Length: 390
Image (cartoon, rainbow, N blue to C red; front, side, top):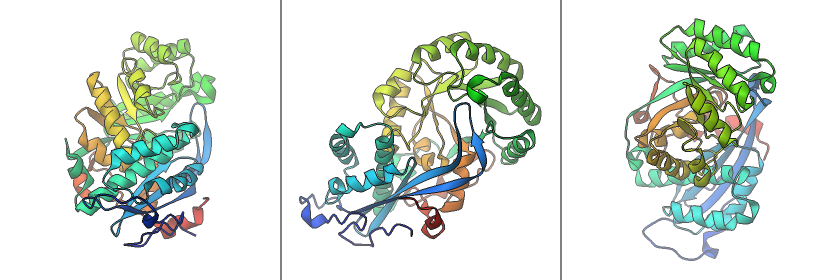
């Protein structure tokens, strides 16, 4: 069955049994959190997907609900099902606390979870809770989240992303043509197949896409850390023939020296950052990439994403939203140093199928005035129910 989140006005979390009456009293200026629940759903892909270092046939979506004052906020992450169980363990630290005190709640949870290691799956769980709290706050205030944060723009540009190494030429062509019909200004495909062992096929696929999109649409590639340093330089120089503008994770994002070295040898933009869980890691990437990718489902939700964008701005770097396009829309609109948002096929199909309020890009952009109150998205729990795993 789908998760049963607290009803309006409930003072008990049905997921945990934690009650607000057992928690310390708080200021009347902010409604207190009165319920928390979470569930995980493993949703099959529409066809096998893979990149340079990994293959998969399903994607797990962890959904979180946080309620206060008769209103529920919704957050989610793409993470292992264990993240849902971690959220339920957080409930006792959240229930009874001021719902608007998002920064304080984040710090409270990080201290509580420090011995578990506040990265990886823990950071994904924290991210989903943070997103739910921001959605809750905006809903209680009756405003669009983008307006609450203060928009720097009202249209957010996207680029088409997918082009999995598991796709044959016909499937790749069909996907690329779909992006072109949506007016996207750039497309991205996966390369470094079999951990870099199929360079010739990588370049054939790049050539195929360039011929499909013509000279006006930008072409990006993502190696997912599948190449060695020298191999990445060699492939990067070959990519110049096809006017590739963006080379994502040519080597592992853990290899900061390698990223710096490759960046100094190639003209195309080097990008990384999707696995950064905290500000120190984000800081270490500044100076070794040309555009910093941030993922709000991993880096601490909207709060972590906004802080990360501020760090990048201090280094004169633009940021790009990694995956989960509908989740990122409000924060992408809120920062001045934003470049674009990834219209990632795997997450687009989930969000459009299972979230009310999901959009289609028009002329390559999403509009923030289509959302709200809150972030404007709500899970279709009945449709999700058959896929629940936790």
